[in-house]
Structure formats: structure tokens, C-alpha cells
Length: 81
Image 1 (cartoon, one colour):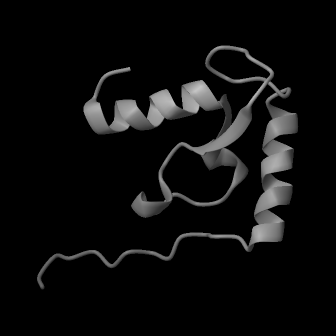
Image 2 (tube, helix red, strand yellow; image 1 turned 90 degrees about the horizontal axis):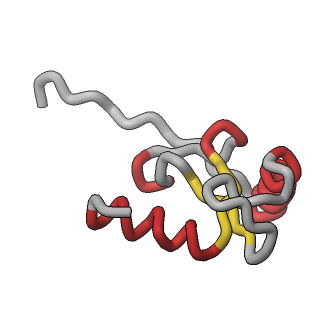
């Protein structure tokens, strides 16, 4: 294939290292959803999806509440937030 770019391997951590990383992201974000400010039902969201070569790294993760997290995923599929 001419001009094809090989995919680089993404950084994917083992489960224990990923849990520690998520804790650091939650702490970095002040234990608040970065969209609505809630402090309950918090989750860590990949800005660039793993399926799109998004890495497990602090720069690619953000704290969202479960409601905003669901909205982000629905928005990506439908184009509406």
C-alpha cells in the first residue's frame, strides 16, 4: 500500500497502574466533573478514545461525572451534546 502510515502502538497500562493513574487524574481535577462541577459519581474519560490510539496518560484523561461522561460518548456518536 502506497502512502499508508503504520499505526503506532498506544500506551495501555495494566489494571493496577491504570487505577493509580485514574486516582491521580481525579486528584488533579479536584475531585470534580470538569464539565458541570459535580463531586459525585465521578469517572475518568479518555479525551482521545483508546480505539483511536488514545493513550492511558494524564494528558489524555479528564474527570467527568457519570452523566456528563454518557453525554460525551453520545455526542461523539451523534454529533450533538
